Image 1 (cartoon, rainbow, N blue to C red):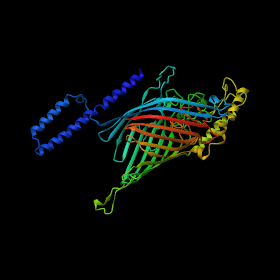
Image 2 (cartoon, rainbow, N blue to C red; image 1 turned 120 degrees about the vertical axis):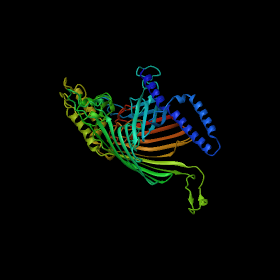
Image 3 (spheres, rainbow, N blue to C red; image 1 turned 90 degrees about the vertical axis):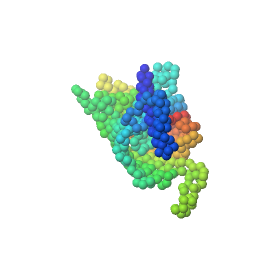
Image 4 (tube, helix red, strand yellow; image 1 turned 120 degrees about the horizontal axis):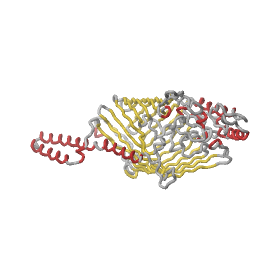
Length: 571
């Protein structure tokens, strides 16, 4: 019932807003016809009476169409309906070694592997348009609103284990925004908006739409130089899940969490086929500290963290980032001690005998123009991204302190009071003290490679930085076009916000590095296919590979493979 309501509601919205574009086009066509008739009358080709008879006949014919009964709202200047549908086959597999810490802190006595084989789809439907007075708007809905960094729906998925399951087949609004072109150079936008920053999927998942406000300045100095700057104030997460920060009679001290971004960059055009673009962005957070109705140790429960649930999100966590073991066994989503500098860039050019530029022996002699060689030309894009967390040392120190604090409480008779982040084996509660067996289990956990990795590593440069470098050849614009991409990516353990990194490539994980290769082909205008392969391994072999909202549940991946085959329709 809910799915039907959502679809019918969105369909009605599309009809109410998109369909009025038809008479607007007809009105524009009629205006052009009237101008042509006026010109013919002035030239004496038609008489006034003949022109009036033609106009009257066209008006009568139009009044009989359905379009004449739909009126465009006076505030709307233009509307575009767009979207995309992607069908995908996907295989992921990862291996974990003996000695890794499994769910619940249990020490794995042997290595293991995990494999996913899935047939999936993603659907996005949107409307965008311009209003009078230089305003604009947009609305978009996407499938699987419960997983913000994917939108993928797995065919056959069903929590009740029935055939042809479709309990993921929901759509939610993932973009809704209003904006204003205040001047030729300044644009202001508010709402859940398309990504306003120049960035890459290394830092931001392509499926995330930041919410809040952004201010953009973009100025052209002649034809060669473009300078731009963007500021973003994003509502990262609402206090208590709904913005309640101080309830009547409550003792909580919970803050709304905001993410701030400041970016400045340039684009320099060497000629019409060649340009360089680069920027620097600094990300910071506020309101990430507060008390909880549950204990801090509760954030390290054996159940995966639910970022949408109150008191279980990184926004309300005033403690360390640990991520020493698998995701269900430790907190990997904390945003404390994150202040990230990102520097994306690219160099675009074309190669081939068809790339040439007219030249003149005499600028006054138009006949002397050399039109160059006729032939093929191939677009090439060399791209890179670099990010560094300037607070990575503090982030790793807090993780170390959390483990050492738990180790200090691991003795027979301890009740685990004051647990600072790592869940000790049961009972370890106020009801019953730790037994010798509990202590032995905990000692095995602390002795595991993943926990020892946190204690002895994490301050190396590669643990604090993330980088991506690659090349793309070709483009997808028309039928028959090809595009190939190859890049290397490395994401340090403490380098980035683990809640934003892309889920489609390296399993939403940090401390991963590897190669990604893909090739795409346009079968016809708007319809393309892509084949992609990725292989990855840990950046630091002494540390785990923590992830949030993971596909594979392994938190200590040693080898990782990904294969995807997509069929995409864009309209």
